[in-house]
Length: 332
Image (cartoon, rainbow, N blue to C red; front, top):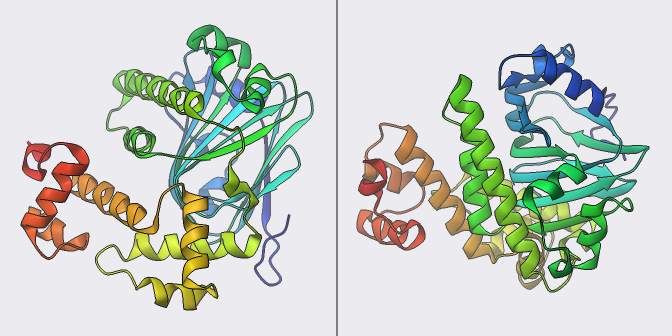
């Protein structure tokens, strides 16, 4: 795997799972900033938040809400563990169990099982904005806690969760999971309350993940089959949508910009994101609006305009259909 930047010589940061566990056990705080963990390289390479916390006695969680300041490669040595990588927005190309995955920025879950000499490598590019949650889990303790119904799972997930072999699986995140993930990343509490809140949200996240697993007809996510060119194109379009919610370019304009036909773009988008282009735009507008309603003093009309609705009444109706409450009810 390589970074595309011309003449780039990215920093390589290597952290073992054992190092993470040892550091977390040595700290009393429930949330530990990664740049205080002895790997100070992170402090100069990211802008935003990256926290590590324990999840019960099952494993560790990494919470990321950050921008990449300088390109770098993060290589984790993982043995006899599972990893669940939930990406709400942004993301990085990854190599899990020697399988390269070109991430397109759509809400997605990547799950992998690692044997004795497992590695998890992420290639971060300058300017990437990443929001998501990573879990490193003990497969036996996870099974004891959640008691999954293995006979209802696709074969690839049965093998992955039992850690009998090194496997990789991905799927698009449906709205329910995306909303739980967003609430987890925001974690509005501190100290002991933060620990309780995170434990509850992570358990909710895992329970809903297994609900989605049981509903799968196949353990294969077709999004993993997209070419690197199409993955890059979808990533550029998703970034454009997220940065221009008030007035994104037309589909024809976007197709021309990324070198795809209109039909190819729409088909690739749905294959990658698990939802249509219009469904994704609606999802991002609603999530952005909810965040503004809860965390900003802006008026409802200003929030409506910020996410692409010139008519406040139309915004209110769309919001109620999506969240089953009005913007004003959400705020109060």
